Image (cartoon, rainbow, N blue to C red; front, side, top):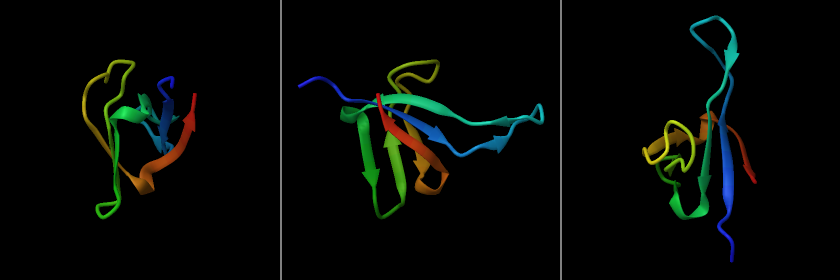
Length: 68
C-alpha cells in the first residue's frame, strides 16, 4: 500500500507585515498522532524547512487537512 500524504493548513492570521498568512505542512499517515483528550494533532512534517521537527497544533487552529 502506498504511503498516504496529507497537507495540514492552519487558520489564517495577520502576519508581521500586516498581510493575511497561514502555516502549511506536508506529512504522512505514519507520523500523525491524534491526542483526543488534549485536543491536539501531533505530527512530523516530511517536506519543507520544518521537516523532521515535531509539531503540535490544536484542533481549533486547523483549517484544512486534505490527502494528496
